[in-house]
Image (cartoon, rainbow, N blue to C red; front, side):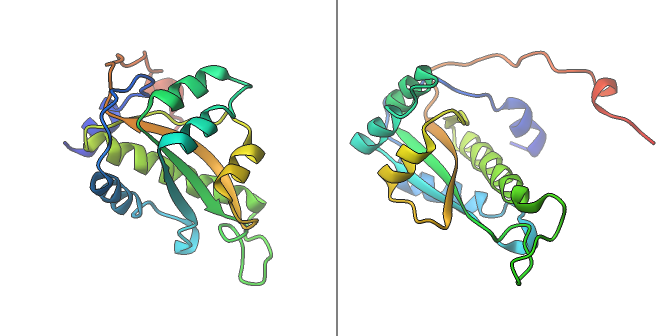
Length: 178
């Protein structure tokens, strides 16, 4: 599979088979995702693979959008993407490097999350990136340190659906040359 096939073929998956994901496959995905670029090579993204009862408890922390909890509970694996705070977009003295202030850390974590999803797709797994959940409750359940921020949740497993690609905007709508 080349990069174009991977990017065009990957879909958000919300129905998974119950088959467990081998930890060796997860390690391979993370090894590949670790090549995602980051601000001054800070590599702030950290991954937490969650299964079993803890995964289901996290699924209960999605009352703002309960369907997310259903998806999390039926996926065999939940990858929690976190980031180390106050490194990406900062100088060594703690000042901001750009006018984006601390926003750059979300950019780096987003690139890493997409790299995770594409690598998982290459391994035959499906993923969906979620952003609606109770951040404080989940951070407490996971025992996240104060220097970490919860970025997103990614239910992961073998797809039990094959969604078609939604229509895309024309390049002329997306691209401007100056």
